[in-house]
Image (cartoon, rainbow, N blue to C red; front, top):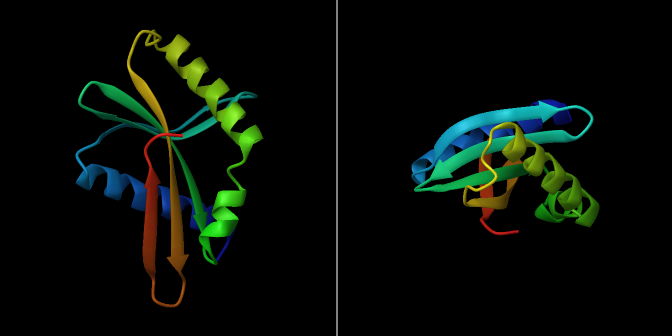
Length: 117
């Protein structure tokens, strides 16, 4: 399966996961070139969550490796851009990451949600 397809599946599974946990999905794949993309923007109570999703079909270590310090800095820049453009700078927000591991044989997924990064 192509990595872009796997990534989209991971994002869709994350949306379902977050909704079951009481999150309201505000937006997905919010993009501003050349700054970057926010995979999922969600809200729970009065807090906005900016969620990066990393999906793998092998092991979580590969997904963890894809979310290094440079990626976090880029993620922070695009979140700031979103907050400024939407006049939400004063809002309470949180940066989060979700790691999704998909077993292609069983078609089952395992999700690890790190609410605070």
